[in-house]
Amino acid sequence: MSVVDHVREMAAAGLHSNVRLLSGLLLTMSGNNPELFSPSQKYQLLVYHADSLFHDKEYRNAVSKYTMALQQKKALSKTSKCLPSEIEVKYKMAECYTMLKQDKDAIAILDGIPSRQRTPKINMMLANLYKKAGQERSSVTSYKEVLRQCPLALDAILGLLSLSVKGAEVASMTMNVIQSVPNLDWLSVWIKAYAFVHTGDNTRAINTICSLEKKSLLRDNVDILGSLADLYFRAGDNKNAILKFEQAQMLDPYLIKGMDVYGYLLAREGRLEDVENLGCRLFNISDQHAEPWVVSGCHSFYSKRYSRALYLGAKAIQLNSNSVQALLLKGAALRNMGRVQEAIIHFREAIRLAPCRLDCYEGLIECYLASNGLREATVMANNVYKTLGANAQTLTLLATVCLEDPVAQEKAKTLLDKALTQRPDYIKAVVKKAELLSREQKYEDGIALLRNALANQSDCILHRMLGDFLVAVNEYQEAMDQYSIALSLDPNDQKSLEGMQKMEKEESPTDATQEEDVDDMEGSGEEGDLEGSDSEAAQWADQEQWFGMQ
Image (cartoon, rainbow, N blue to C red; front, side):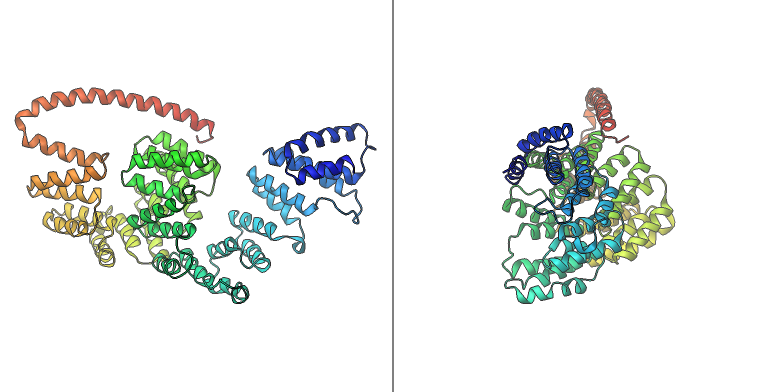
């Protein structure tokens, strides 16, 4: 048994640090005495040494050694046996390139492998790389090849559906295995559900997944619950989305996938303490995923610490450039910091990655409106309406843009009425309709609208707006009650606090002078806080430069 055989045994046993040390020494000896090892032995040493470097995440060094190994392989006869596979070496090189974010080099090395020699994992990697590069036809071909070899490759199925391949066509590729293997009767329904997901038909997707969960052995499956939560979120049903995320989290306390959306929803609800706890828990599980950074970023964003949110969003994108929630977080932070053109770039990238997610378009449209781009916002809103269909969400989005145009107020009203006919409980539509009624000073109609919306749900914004309307009709005591409810739901809601303080001043005019003095004192304290914020912004700006964010 030669020393190279010992290296091979240690590599097979996973003793990577030992392999690295010994193979490094042996390669140096070979360099000083080329006759010491045969070409096949030197090839093996280079591959095993490169593998150990890959394990240590030294990807550039690993690529260098793999390249040397492939050069050495050319000197060997084709009859050489029991050697590391050249195909496997090229796959490892491609993995290194993807870790180094050199996708073009990864595609080039895998493209060099003849089609007949490509294993399922090579085709899967190629499919994902092609998809990321926008080469959809090549991506579809590679995903189909994966399914031909492994018809139960579910992620390949999702890849095809995401590229607009019809659900029926995808299902036909798995039909033989469904019919021949027991306990796979659920798969055709699963494919149907995710076909709806990727066409943006959230209602039918939710119904199909619910039927899948209730009527089969897949009840309490964490992946299905996570998908269901995400669908409720996309459909604007935040209450059920949070409920399903909580259910999934209880079943799997180490769950990371989808927790960025969950954290965002909690932050929007004003549950910042829960967001902070969630972020800490996720960091304890892994800081190498985007999700914990996004969750912490949401906490900062809704605490109005935009520089810190920007830094955390950029860190999340560093870890996963395909994280839609990270792109939305960074885009929102940039927008609120006045860097609208940079924000637009991030929202556009989010749309490219998730063309069926309405919140991506909402972010971009908000940027257009913030930069007086009413025409661009109108074009985008109309395109979303045509692409995703006339549902309560797209109708409300289009109405939101129309409300910014003085000549389109009637159109906005018609769109909002249609949205509320479809979904009377859709909060965004209720809010926009209430804003319109407030402009028209139709306070009684606004009160009726908000009371009706609050009959089956409780929301901070709706309670606060009802308080504002009640003040307008001199119903001060009930207005105070509504502001109190709003603050109990979100203690950080500044507008509710301002409404309550304004009422207290009006009720106690004799104390006005005294309160002004207190306000002056508080104002001086606030200036100190603001100075601290500027200091903090400068600190995070330095860190932004470190992460290449400027």
